[in-house]
Image (cartoon, rainbow, N blue to C red):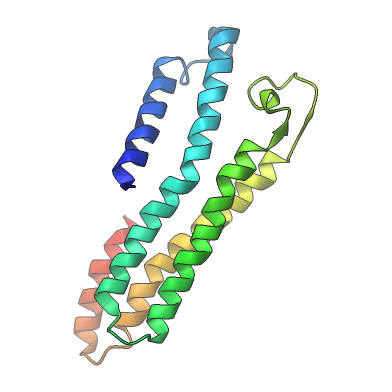
Length: 167
């Protein structure tokens, strides 16, 4: 499935939330609208994992095209292991979001009796993994470039092109 489908659905969900009061003070939103916002917010969180994996995998597959020859080099295996580690993490995210509370209604109606995971720990762990994953994807091409046989001045130039990904 094309990444544009996921990005479009994520975009529509975010827009719909904005139109329903996501940017307003909580006291200015009706109870029904707040519940609807909670449901949509949960849907956005569920879609987030597959969208992030597709985005990162597309970059990593492009790196394979650029840097890997026909042989199964160290770079090839490093990029592939990054793809599959990301796949495992981002595959698990929708499930951890979907099953974060029992009953599910407690996600968008917090006063409902039940139990939830510690979402603060979830957000910190997800953020830490995202930072580590992003840094890995940023450093991979630069690491490969610095192992090529070319003048140092050229290495800096090519590294600068890949470093634009930090912007």
